[in-house]
Image 1 (tube, rainbow, N blue to C red):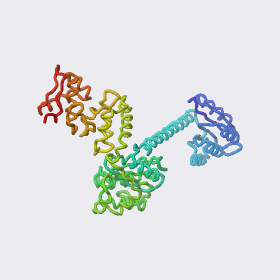
Image 2 (tube, rainbow, N blue to C red):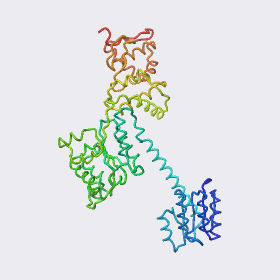
Image 3 (cartoon, rainbow, N blue to C red):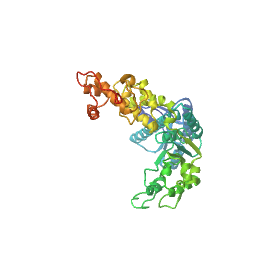
Image 4 (cartoon, rainbow, N blue to C red):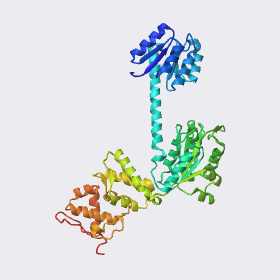
Length: 471
């Protein structure tokens, strides 16, 4: 355990030597003191990973060594040694910060085991802090991509609301990143080290949503074989995300309203009231105000949820963000899929800019991921979007095919025939260039022949005209 520094504090000469010898044998760096004053002086001048101290010392109480260790470095662990008759003192020491205690007499194996347990605990704690810090970075609002004025407004609201306890209602079409915004709020708030719990209100039958939110007692209903914590209980002192809140039944909305108002609830099958400290964030892709006016959503719950509203715009209303998003997704999916793709051609970018994106940012990311995966070069070209969900081209192919290109089907036909012609009808080579399988290419050729298109063959070095030509 090279590099771990331990301070041993004990006035019993035999025990003192036993501890020092045992720890050095395990390759720890060991320093020692025979009284509290010397130990406290060493703690003021040096950094130690762990202090092992007797509670009874000749000049001061071992509690003072514990307090000094915590005062000078909160990361320093303390293990206290006590006689059998003073175990209560050891328990008190643990309440104010000691990691564990040992009662005399103890063996070398016992002290080694407690020390190993402490350093394993510290390692897990350090790893947990690192992972939480990484989550905070990943879900920081600065990582929500967008320079458009609409997104800047969203960022401003996130910054203002994160430090508060206010309930937030995030509205916007599917695929706009509502959950990402909710996580950004949580991980930039004072609650970031507590739980972020998500419940999809549309994913569970009405009868199970109540149990899911509030928990249940064993035997509360058929199949309730054990006591279960609900999402509110799990999210205590943290954040609860109620996704697709508009799908919650009117009956359950009344119970949710009470929790938001009184910060208390009862488990299913238990009349005892439980108090919770939970920040609620709700999301929906529907207009809750409109639903409330139609009596399809409780108006009082709408106002309780709508303390701080955030509306995320559809991608078609903030197209100036598309280049930034594309750059981000290319980098992300190139790294995840071990590809060297780093650029997108101007023609392909114009194609993306011209699309309406009914699936919003999620649809754009799917398109980029697919393009990255099938690309054989470091540049994404229009051909990599050919089979993707009705993507409309932005630039005209008429300079290439002398046709008036209007939709994806025409682009697909024209480009496949172009590649076949340029490769002398070689289907294997053409499929490779197009980023599709030979089987897919063969099926496309069969479709083209059925509508009377001339298909380039070996030796022809030509291609059929675009479908609009000659009509």
